[in-house]
Length: 594
Image (cartoon, rainbow, N blue to C red; front, side):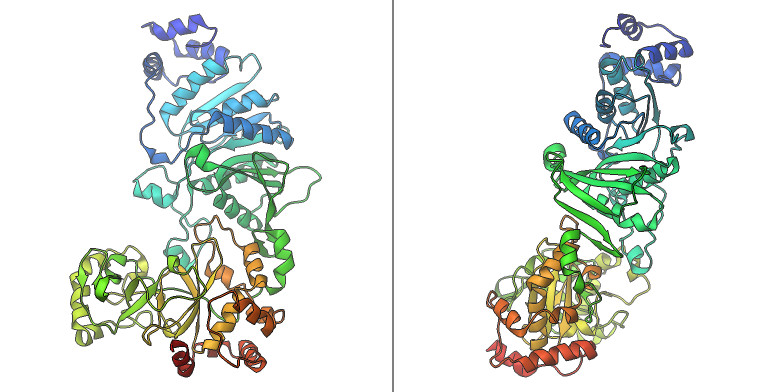
């Protein structure tokens, strides 16, 4: 029941019709909430729900995680330590309202609260909780205005953006992507737009997919910028904060404080992801704009862990470490490639069972010609510097280059053609537009480089930046899937030197300073292309490489010399394309096999 207001409790229990204007005036006097009821029908619904305490917000459609009141309270205390003392508070997705309650408890200068929430039951729940917990808000001169509305369509009024007031935008926006909401067939999606400006294949293949919270935070930073000053404090995945900081140079936000406070999302929300309180201040006087973000723990807010962001025109995960190794941050003389992309593992990938029998993802035995079957490595296979001479999987490679006609398979490999044709329904269901208008059974991520005998590869998915040497199996090159990245070589020594350089302390430290290991794919082509192998050789002698090779179970040819290393460096400088073009080093391959 409503604390200290028996008359109001009687109103909600009586079957009486009231004048809405008079009722709203009464509700405002005890709660501070303006326009408590929109109409008489809403009052009747609210009264019925209030008396029966029937609260149900329905399905997970909106991707929300309600913030524990303790976490909301700790957030406000960190804000106080950062000299945040707002007079106006905006909560754009307020849910049960725990951030609003924590703010009213901790911030003493608050004059106005403005909330938006798409789910009607949450609005009702919040109004009840204000009556029960913050019923003296009106006496303190606090005005509370809440709206049942879709954030993506809501227009925030200009009277909130008074530069003479201290504005705080606080909350916990939905932790879900546009793609996930589309799968759930939710209508709670912003208008589809490639708002980051991706072009070409990135936009087509899904790189333009984004978390809802990222869109919300960007819009709120624009709102604060319109007000000229203010603070944003949002709970979000660390990847979202990283993405926002990465966008700073392309936006007009005058950010003057930028901090991230890590907390245990598993404990707070039972979600296995890295998350933080993201604190952004805009327009502070006598402060220069920032493009770097300091990282702390929410439980130890005084202890800086690292700083990430922009160093000149480079985006890095650890500013201090990067400055020590930045001299190799340039452009790789060798081109990194991603593995083969087919988007139909049930048909195109075959598991090697006992007696070398093959089984597809549909649990069917598969018997086709061997010529277009290649051993396949996936991210989980790239854990060591050397790979065994067998693999768990094989993959069907229908083309040697993108767009190549595949009709030859029917004549030369009839069993494979029959297999692919009988499973055409799965291949035709591939959603990506890259397959539209292409030959039957097309694949991507394929080219001359795919068929080089030696590869140096890395998993894009794992936290450790371990590089592996991939050797041919039964005189056939080994393929990698599209979660892996690799360099191609025709000569074993070229692959060996490259492997040792990439696994050196110098390059490993450099990569650590660049990569965000809490990302879904910490290592990608853009990052790997920043490793200037040629510059690294100026700081790594042959003896350095051979000493590091002692740590690995790897073949070192007898008689390897300084001249070999000099030849490698010279060709890396003058003709890097020669590394996977030209004659294959078959003599070395036979020696290694023995």
